[in-house]
Amino acid sequence: MSNLLFDFSKTRLVMLDDVVSIKGSLVENLFDNSIKDYENVHKKRPSKCTRCKSSNVLGVEIMGAYDGILFWECDICENTILRFKKDLTEKYLQLAKGLWTNPSDWGYVPPSKFN
Image (tube, rainbow, N blue to C red; front, side, top):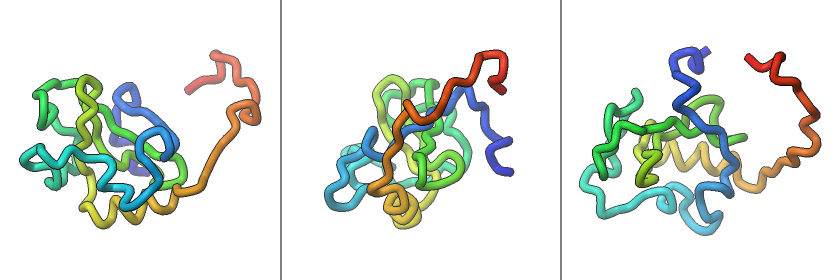
């Protein structure tokens, strides 16, 4: 299971609608094209943000897109950093298009049962 390779205190799980507009190319909506190496792939969590150089880089998992971290995001400036090639990231994002969830349906789990 690939998720065991990640520090979950440095990850966040979100819905697609929380990070991108559903119109057009989803992956294009994630990036600031003014960043010099925005299309470079970083398989492992980068030690610093490519824009602001902060070390607060989180892994982002999109519900319904990919089982694990799909891309990296700076927790300070919200710069997005690819984990996979642009076209593969787009394919994963398309899988989550139209999905939704209702937190009220999740039920209550007491903190003592958390992992």
